[in-house]
Image (cartoon, rainbow, N blue to C red):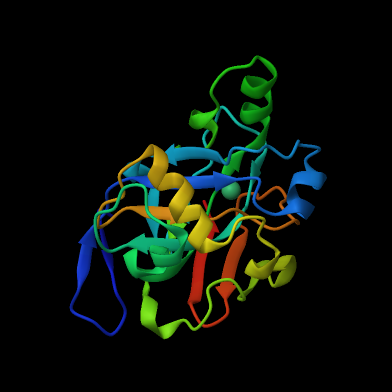
Length: 218
Ligand code: MG
C-alpha cells in the first residue's frame, strides 16, 4: 500500500514519510507514567508498515504485548519547511483514521536501555490506515471525537480537543526538523485507553467527520 486515496476524488498520493507524534494527550502520558517533554516526541514509521482498511494485523513473534493507539492522521498536500502555525492547515490535503500499533514490551525494553525504540513501532502492518477525506470537509480538526472498539467494546474514547499540541502546532513543529512533502502522513498521538490486542480481535476506529477504519488480528 504505497498509494493513498482522497475520498470522492480522483486524487491519490504516493506515500512519503510517516511521521508520528508521541505523548500528545495528557491522560495517555499519565497511563504510561511518561514525562511531559518541552520538545515534541517525534518518530517515523516506514511505508512498509501501512495496512489498508480491512486488512489483517500480524503481531511479530518477538512480541507478546501489542497495543492499539487510535490517532487522527493528516495527509500533507504540498511542500513546506518552517511552516507557521497560522498557515499550517493550508498544507493539508486530507484527514484519515490510523492506528499506531506498538509492541509495548519491546518498546519498554529499548526505552529502559536508552536505545531508539522505532522497531517497536514500525513493524509490517503496524500502521492500519483509512482513505482520506478532503481537508476542506472537516470544519475544525481540533475538535473531533475518536472512538476505538475492540470486538464491539469501547477501549478508547477521546477528543482531539484534548491534544496538548493542536494540528497547526504539530505541523509547525515537525516542519522545523523535516521538510514536509505531498504524500507525507502525520499521526497526531493517542488518547488514553491503550491496551493489548490478541489473535482474532476485530478493531474498529471512528473519528467524527473523518470516517472509520477496521482491522483484524491474524
Ligand atoms: Mg501513538
